[in-house]
Amino acid sequence: MSTETRPLTIEPVKPTTNPRPVDLALLAVAVAWGSSYLAAKDAVTTDGVFGFLAIRFGIAVVALALVVAPRLRGLVGTEVAWGAVFGAILSVILALETFGVTKTSSANAGLIISLTIVITPLLDRRVGVPRLPATFFCAVAMAVAGVGLLTQSGGFAAPSLGDFLMLLAAMARSVHVIVISRASAGRKLDPARTTLVQFIVAMAVFVVLSATTERGVVEVAAHLTARSWFLVLHLALTCTVFAFVVQMWAARRTSAARVSVLLGTEPLWAAAIGVVVGGDPVTIVGVLGAALILTGTYLARTVEGQSDRTDHDAAADAMKPTAARSSSSSSSPTTVPIAAVARSTAVPDAAGWTPVVAKAPSSASSTISASISSRWRSARN
Image 1: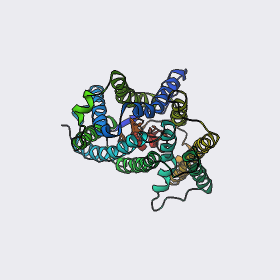
Image 2 (image 1 turned 135 degrees about the vertical axis):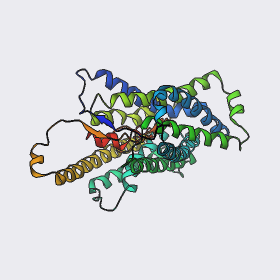
Image 3 (image 1 turned 60 degrees about the horizontal axis):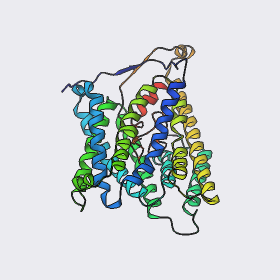
Image 4 (image 1 turned 180 degrees about the vertical axis):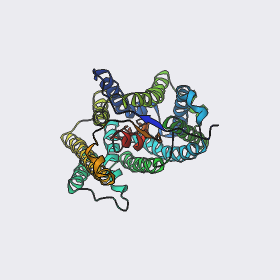
């Protein structure tokens, strides 16, 4: 194995003259992630979660390995070590999400997991980092109120176990994003190789856990119907591998803001598919709760993104000599080490990685991207 990882030179983003193909591809990823909640709910039962996830990740590992095969010779120990850490956390996320989606509606699952967007900045508070603006906390309160209404849409009662598990998954996903962001800072981690290691570790965890249940991998596989196999392939190939490839491709052909907005529509697709295809009930209280969650998370992402850009620009400007500041409009390429990949892999998941340029996964989605990491973001902002 190579002991050296060369930095990736990223040229200034040059949006294509015809952005439609890129927009459609990113929307396809958002729709796929949105559909993953219902797909997981239809394909898996509570007693077969670990076996199901082992099969799903096994397929994803094989497919992704074929895609990134030319880069595997450059695999280094640092990527293996951090990929293993990311994979261990990812296995917790996917277990919580998959168990959760079996105990709640797919619409609720897709909306609640989007709270990752507001939870991540709250957890990622470091010394020397300016406080978040008051507007962000208003957005958080709005999103939390929305979750309260959403879980009470069927009448006053304690939130379901599934809703609670999805909330825990959102918190775990935030931890995943933060760990990836901090681990990638100052390290030369290749996103493709690190993601592959991450998936291999998650698959291994699920294989081991499935052996402790009454329904192991072989048992679950033997009882999957043709429809269930189709859904497993959709989760493994479309929501994971396809999403990863599209994000890597689109990141060089459009703006960070455009990617964030398009991938950020995932909760909308999750709710729409859950209602239209899955037959999830619609109530006035539930609709109001969903609207508050979507508005709150969108506002939080916007406010936090603006705050980060302001801090980044101020810090960069302070470090420039006076003469350099006057010529900062130059468009020379930036050389940075490629970062670790984390949205949500494929969750029901949305795929295991986080939106490429979103501060946090829009939802489970919400961990190919975070995965494509803060390095991509900092190189392009």
